[in-house]
Length: 169
Image (cartoon, rainbow, N blue to C red; front, side):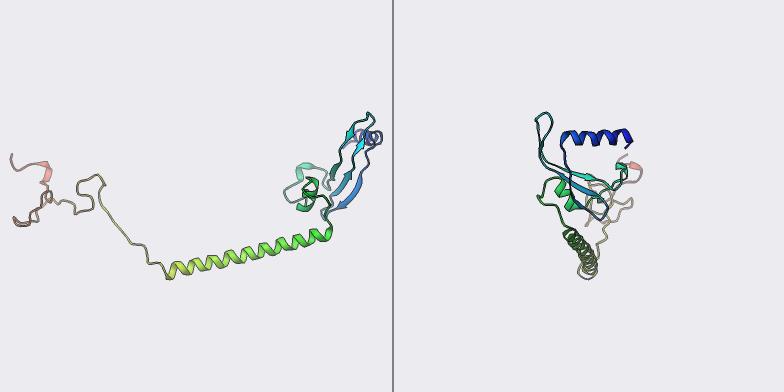
């Protein structure tokens, strides 16, 4: 922010009767302010504001997690009172414990599923079906070029002449 903009903003705050109360600072260095409701120089009622003054002045360098969840809830008016440092540290410790527990649970579940797969389930059956489902002999023995049956055990369709020649010709 340049000098003229900072000067203009300071002058505007003096004329608008906007008074910032410093509410707290987080462990990243961000400062949080509360501006109570006030009436401006034109007689308009301006509702209360919650403002964050970022430690990193460049907004592009901010990422998810750079503002603690508790402070974000206060800024978005999800909670009425600003968080204390003890509360933030307690919640952070709780989140770390949950990460460790979930990691342990995932590893135990992974080991259990491997044991279950190895001990209880039979190996997969190897099936081999030749042909296409629309073929008349699907799932049955494929007709051979050489006759294999005798007159007593003849089955229609079990023998196909070679080269498509019929024996009537």
